Image 1 (tube, rainbow, N blue to C red):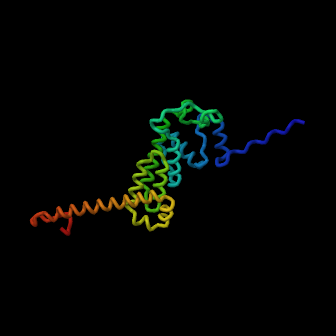
Image 2 (cartoon, one colour; image 1 turned 120 degrees about the horizontal axis):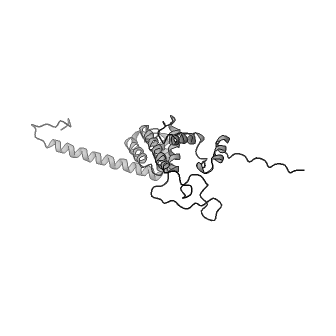
Length: 224
């Protein structure tokens, strides 16, 4: 009797069967999925790529954060030359999976890095515009984990320091300090330095105002 057919291999977990089939059929024209990102994030990224990065961003703040991380992860590092292809299973690094990557063989089209950068920048602006006391710590950690998100790191850090009194009374602050003691110390130190500079500047201005002639009263500080 003929041997029974081998059972079909199950689809990889984390992605719908349709997505897996499309990825297999597309071959080297696509990026192999990272299961740490959701199907919705890849769907949003594909919409952005089809529009060269001019598609409206998703309404969900959480999806915007995930889309930003995905775009940043796929973006090639500026100034880093492309390495020769090293397929998985070879004696070399074995890092290339055959999809669009940063090797010489599977380098992305020249317009892809620009589109990814445009998407990442748009996501960062959305996150900066939506900074508040409840999300600033999480967005700061997210920005520090993403290569190249310097503007978001700076904006989130400045927001935390500027609203430190409101941030430190939240339960999230205790967890944040326990998990990120060095970063928490940096935030507190930065806030203290900024406050000291502000007080020094205020003292200098007030002293200068008091030295004015009585005939020219200060119009800036009522106490002068």
